[in-house]
Length: 127
Image (cartoon, rainbow, N blue to C red; front, side, top):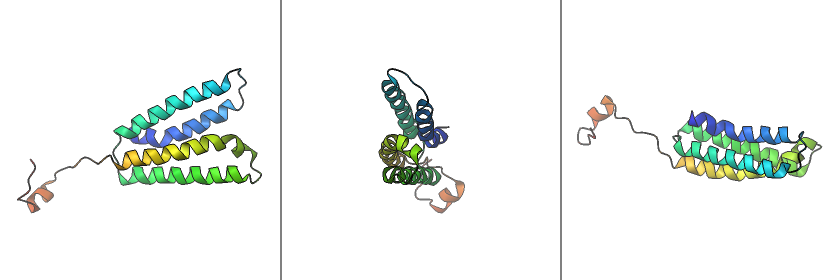
């Protein structure tokens, strides 16, 4: 569950910012900052608890590439007006994705001792 949330939560932030573009509130920026801060903290908590498998790292690298490409398109403004609204959040997510990738790369997978491995390494039995 933590792996799935670790991949989906950045897109939830982008969707939240997209929905907030159509809402008019007096303190909209404060509400956006509060919700984005809560979602980022939940995201890092999920990443802290998830194992750093190869598929998790590949998913995060793919997210990072998507965010960086969208950020470059938003900065260069290739007649995509919707990306100009998302450029600040994409810049934030690109940096957070790098930190998240660092967190996940330091989470080691649980070692399982199979019979085949323990039979071959009779000198190093851990159980």
